[in-house]
Length: 201
Image 1 (cartoon, helix red, strand yellow):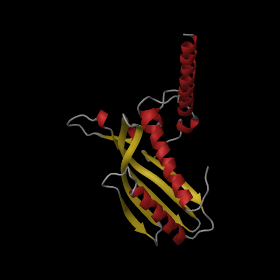
Image 2: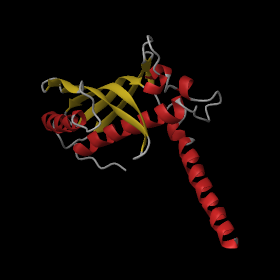
Image 3: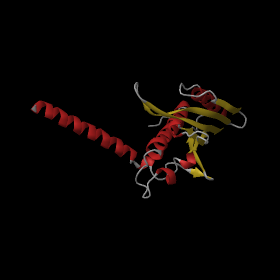
Image 4: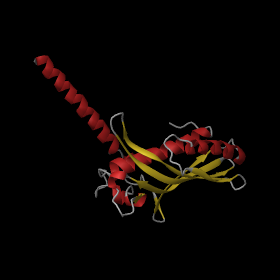
């Protein structure tokens, strides 16, 4: 009996510790105020990268190949495609629809459909990555005869996803949509940088 009690006690401590770590991660400033920029009333993520040793044409080719991996991602949906390839102007654009996973296990899963436009603007020695026009479709929130499209502006902005004091994430809009969207954006932008030879943490 004593051994069973000890086993249960330490299991509870471990689970509480894991929960605390997860909550700590979600409470990180990384996901809090200012993490989702709004430009002209619309959510728009944007980051510039300096690659001084590469020309526009070299960067264009590398980012074209990288964009192709995005549109061929196993979680993509049928309407995903590259919409613009302009070597002279240094512009690559793609319209992406893919699954954004919240939970993915053999016996249970939770996901939303995420749509966005991905744009790379390229010049000699640098490029800018932009992710904009984000919308979601989340089946558990769909209602018959009502538009089921969820706009990022209504779900992941500071106003929509944070508590009044800005120190906590709201359960659905914050802990699910905001966190996973930021994570996906970071994954895409980091992948683009690494495809061009940059080494990021």
